[in-house]
Amino acid sequence: MIEQTLFKIPYWSMSSLNFKEKKKEVEKLLKNYPETKQGKQTFLTNRSLSKPNFADMFVKLFKEEFAVLSDVIKRDFRINDIWSVSYKKGDHHPPHNHGSTGLSGILYLDMNDQAPMTSYIQPWNDYVSDHTIYSEISVGEGDIIVIPQFVQHFSSPNTSKNIKRIVSWDMSFTS
Image 1 (cartoon, rainbow, N blue to C red):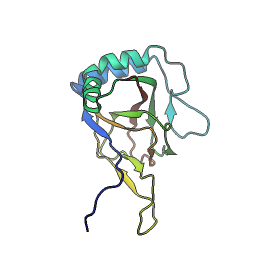
Image 2: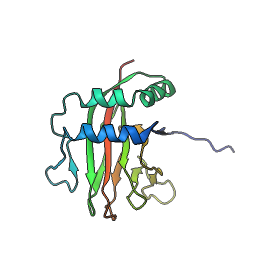
Image 3: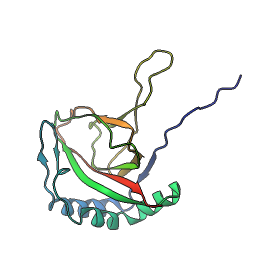
Image 4: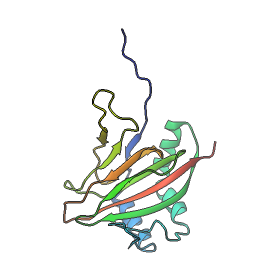
């Protein structure tokens, strides 16, 4: 008998090129789009605020990384929405996804060794134990992770006194 894989969920990871310089530019850009606490969320974000030109400037800044992604997935795409999130000590993000089609990306802008990684939830339970399966991808500052939008994910409470800050976006395919 041969064991095979019935399903797989791809993800893509890369380190930003020239991240120190790009980080300064992203931080300058984000000053135009301040984060606030919204609703019952424990974290700060600018997701529901109007952010004219943010996506265009972000794509221009990370054009090499987006070109690599497009080449690897063999598809063109556009950013539909982009935002930033800051997690202070104790802040967390409950399980959620970003839709059923397209991709979502995360750039880890500020990420120290004690900050929690993003946890991803397998869409089906373990077939032996019926338990939910979680996966984490080891990341550091400047890393970019891209996943299918349907993948549930969350951020555990930040136990560090340092802020964990990300920029996240949703993409749809154009070809």
